[in-house]
Image 1 (cartoon, one colour):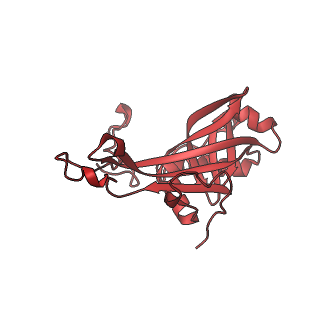
Image 2 (cartoon, rainbow, N blue to C red):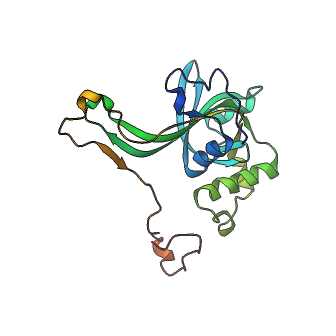
Image 3 (spheres, one colour):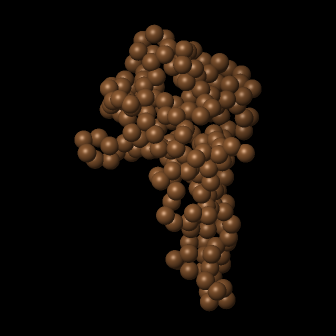
Length: 216
């Protein structure tokens, strides 16, 4: 089973037993989420931006306006803009006997690397299609693609997945033995995000629902 190689930045100082480097695990966590947080340093201060993304093989793609600060910085920096990208799923709220041991069950990925602007037109179009399909598989083929003006106004960043780690917490509360007899309820409150019933635009109320969307 292939794994990413641990580095000084991807080995945590705490809860090392929760960390994994397996590619399949990392990819599954990335593929299930929609929003990542892109962190970088601007004018000596940290900045973290939420943004949509898509994974293709061992690459992440994010997009934005050609006038946005991180896109401009990535374009003029060699060998790219140093970034940290994070993705997190909260799978459950862990309610313990004591307030101290309350927690969350989660799956997360942290990516360290350099963001580079995509300049090849074919790769850029493929990445933009992947961004649309990542949110709703099949949608890229069922909408008008970006025209020349829109492509010129849109920049795409690529981050190679090389320095990557996953971290997970699962299971029940970790209560102290002396608290187990306390009368308070303990356990896990699961969280399960899902698609809701599609709500058409008023002008498309009579347009048939595409087969790739849930009926509700």
